[in-house]
Amino acid sequence: MNREQRLLLIERLVRQNAVTTQEELLMLMEGAGMKCTQATLSRDLRQMGISRGFDGRGGYRYLLPERREEPDEPVPGRETEAITAMTWAKGMLLIKTPPGFAPAVAIKIDRAGRYEIAGTVAGDDTILLIPRDGVSNEAVEECLKTIFG
Amino acid sequence: MNREQRLLLIERLVRQNAVTTQEELLMLMEGAGMKCTQATLSRDLRQMGISRGFDGRGGYRYLLPERREEPDEPVPGRETEAITAMTWAKGMLLIKTPPGFAPAVAIKIDRAGRYEIAGTVAGDDTILLIPRDGVSNEAVEECLKTIFG
DNA sequence: ATGCAAAATGAATAAATATACAATATGAAT
DNA sequence: ATTCATATTGTATATTTATTCATTTTGCAT
View 1 (cartoon, helix red, strand yellow):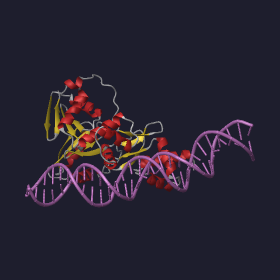
View 2 (cartoon, each protein chain N blue to C red; view 1 turned 180 degrees about the vertical axis):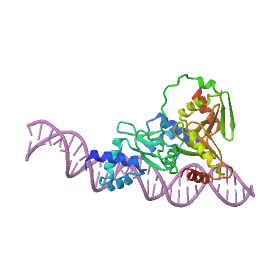
View 3 (cartoon, chains in turn yellow, purple, cyan, red; view 1 turned 90 degrees about the horizontal axis):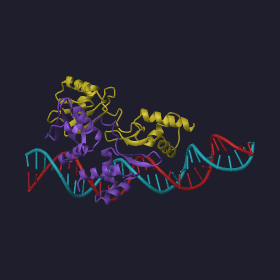
View 4 (cartoon, rainbow over the protein chains, first blue to last red; view 1 turned 90 degrees about the vertical axis):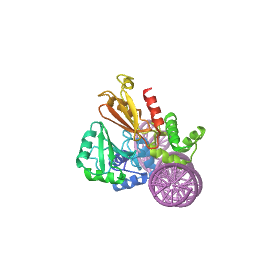
């Protein structure tokens, strides 16, 4: 009912859900028994510094102030694995991990022995995955889902 | 004009000005002799991860994707000497260093947060630098000059 | 309690941003 | 060169978000 509780709820909802619009957040709030109008929500978000950014995969997402850069979970599904972001470039897949995690993740990929994946090179927090020629991006992403799913 | 130049201009303008709306950015672009529509700009911004956030004092502002903040360089300039050779191969730049130096050099490149560079992978004495799709070799080399020059 | 000022809110609307669609350009393969 | 696929872009529009204005609530000093 009061403002303080509403702000706390908003923060929690934004942290736990991939909220893409204020309308969507309003629904969640209503589901939690707290409702207000979009106007109020807009003001609340500004006050808390919660802004609409990108989820790293072409979508929008509201982000908390501190870490308004990196996708925290929006990778194929496996946040349990240390993959924080993926980007296709030059026909290869760049996989980002927290510092130090790349070798472990790369080893897991290598050991899967998938035909679609020619090989990987791991740095400290980045893995370069080189697909076999003629293999589609989608096929590789399917592989990863299999390996980590 | 071409897309690559437009993206680079956008990044520069957003970095150097406190842009609050896309319309405003369009004006700046036109002033720089590069024009497009708001629709195209919206798409460009999404692609580059440049989103509208807050300036910390109640106002709005477009912000570049955050890069990791770095403590100061222990030995400035040392990395430049650590590059012993560079070769383009398969659309990527292979950078050779003395054994053990690759990670330090790669970190410096990463921290520059340049749009042109999608990412790097460092082994022990070799770095694989992957340009973002559509960025020319020359543009990447300019980047490196900026970073190390 | 009463009155007053400041804060909070909603309804309506303005402002800003994203997208559907159609057209054009670019590139790869034949 | 021709075809086909894909990418890029603008126009028009839809969607989303911010703000204005009026009203209500809250806190505080009488």
